[in-house]
Length: 307
Image 1 (cartoon, helix red, strand yellow):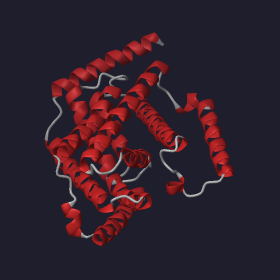
Image 2 (cartoon, rainbow, N blue to C red; image 1 turned 90 degrees about the horizontal axis):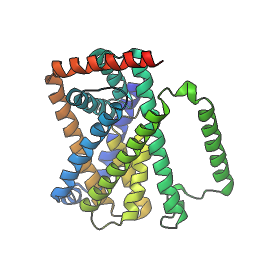
Image 3 (cartoon, one colour; image 1 turned 180 degrees about the vertical axis):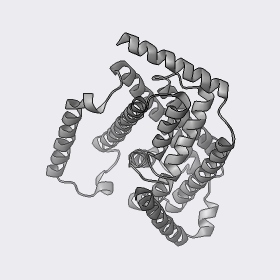
């Protein structure tokens, strides 16, 4: 049911985008496409940073092989972006179980915990950016969220604190990673966010150089939050749609921003398709996977002895 809902949402967004882009004028849109080679070079770096960071993350838990692990994590990204959010996690869970022989329960708990920590890092980063920009007067949040009363702010804070207390109280039931490992992984998530988000700001700045950093920081908050929406396919298309609306709200150059985001979306589609085909027809090195499976068995045996 969820995949069909995701596909219907994607079709609706595509239809809306065709209508909105047509309103802007296809000629003006094509003339506004990024011409700086740095824009495209930064896209490649941004794309590869996530699977590389995830490889480092999972190697904190198991001896995941570098080559085969990177291939699996690239496919995980493609599944998440082209099918539905978290479908990539299902694929990676299956890969850990079938390729490395990791027990199903342990693989599930680890994938779940890594995603919980990723969500914590993403949402706290977005909230901190909005709080800093709003509190310092750099950005008028009322232009984005409208008039928000003090009572609504208090209610939101109370709900957030209550949710935090509940999660902390039941952390042993919701979370299985040892604290040292969890802290290292959380640090990797924050490091990845800093690197990737800095690269996004640089890419957008060279793509549309006439727009100030404050506007791009606002877009960054939107992108971070959108990436954490569960079961949402083709998030780049949703970001393109919301980004055009945000440019209208902020009084920015909608055509230039739309052209840049459209270019990023097309690059994402082409890259995902190409890498999915390439990884489908190539095979994991048997020796590398066998060595990793043997190493995991040794790690698992050591954990059992330690317990």
